Length: 293
Image 1 (spheres, rainbow, N blue to C red):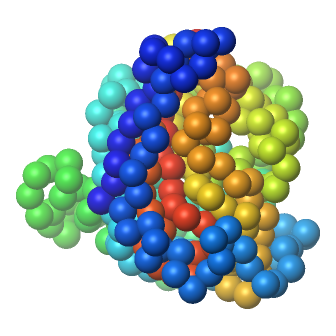
Image 2: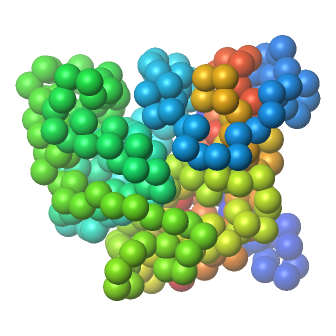
Image 3: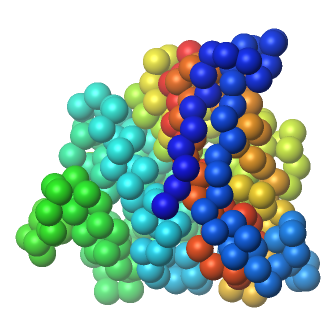
């Protein structure tokens, strides 16, 4: 369950002329039970990204379809309804996951996928090559198709969507949000750029987060769609016993970040969902889409 709000053209800021309607939290008090009010961890934060373990991350965050993941699936199904057919799509900082792309496979003509860590790309390749050690994304495929079709999906439906997605992903490569441009090679733009838990989960410095947002958004063509998911109220997040940095953001921060990255204020739409278990070192998730100016 989530609360949705929009950035409209009324009055929060006389400078930019938009209004933010704050999200209401579902079970927010229970979501942070067992942590302090900031969701901080007693363990030191990792400074070396080579300590990020893709398999541990996948099993910790994507082994179920509880409130967080169910909200993510619904968000992508709803958002992809608004993109043109035969779009080009980039998943920037996709980590070891492919769930954001399941609902795009039948709408786009081509998908490029990039991440900073080669170990994350290797995990995605396992799935693309149908290796036995690959993570099982079929529950996410099933949930996506059930929402799209309005009925329970069949094993044949799941197999067909997986085959379609594997065909659509035509390029995997490295990226670095610190760089301008953040992709190697000649400058390029996409109709749709998706970036999930990337910019705010790669630093604890707010100005650096803004730089990451701007660089990632630079890959969206004018009039294209920027789709982003971010942690809310986080100082860190865990992967096993390792603690990684995060920027502490709320919906207003995210809206300003999108605007300063070149998105149209009136196009910004943000959904919020609370963290679905006490062990999370963040208050919830923010799921946003916006149109590039």
